[in-house]
Length: 303
Image 1: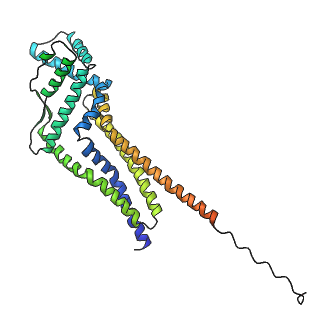
Image 2: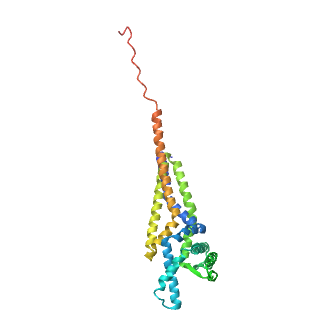
Image 3: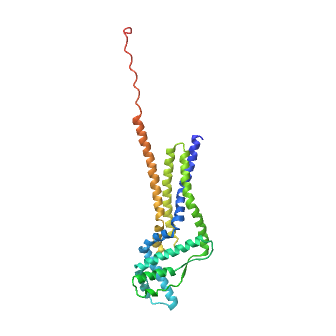
């Protein structure tokens, strides 16, 4: 294989590897990070104390209580609304609220993952009875009066309609495969591109810079996704809470983008520095110019 052909093949393999790298990182994050219930609950747990999330919970729960009370008892006095919201806000500062937050996230995530692994169609719902059980146990541990009277009825809340479930299931199966093969393909293509290169130093530098560029592209995609997600929300008042949730869920993805950027730039700088040191060493150890021989002294005959 000629030198120019090796260079062209190496460039194509490295370019394809750098193109697959950010998509592979995104697929692996969606396939392995978002689908793990324990990791999801751990990621969402600190948000229970986030002010924006807490305000959204107060508004949602308080409005739901008022709507239900109005439907059962008719129009309520205007002073009831702030009283209900203040009561809900006080509850969000208790340990029972954090227990309910973790239990609700665990139940919702488990229900969605079970539906994605199941081929049956239908509405995805979550039973709130286990959540109520944990709340009652926590209230009893804190010796709250009438804690044993918290109802444990099996109330099912809809999470996903059947139409969205089919689309999500197909996307999940694609990500489950791509999350493993895309990063592996990116690594294999990069190694192959460096191996067939006519100048491996340049190939390593190109792969390193491409990795850094892929990390920057991944970080830009995360930022753009956040902006589009918040812009599509119907209620602007809940955008700060949604932004906090988005930032929590994409923490690993943002860390990966910074890692790729740092590794790529660091490797490219190391290769450049090593080449400069090697060139300086060759200049120091190279033999100097050979001096010209001195002209012979004239003989007596020549004199």
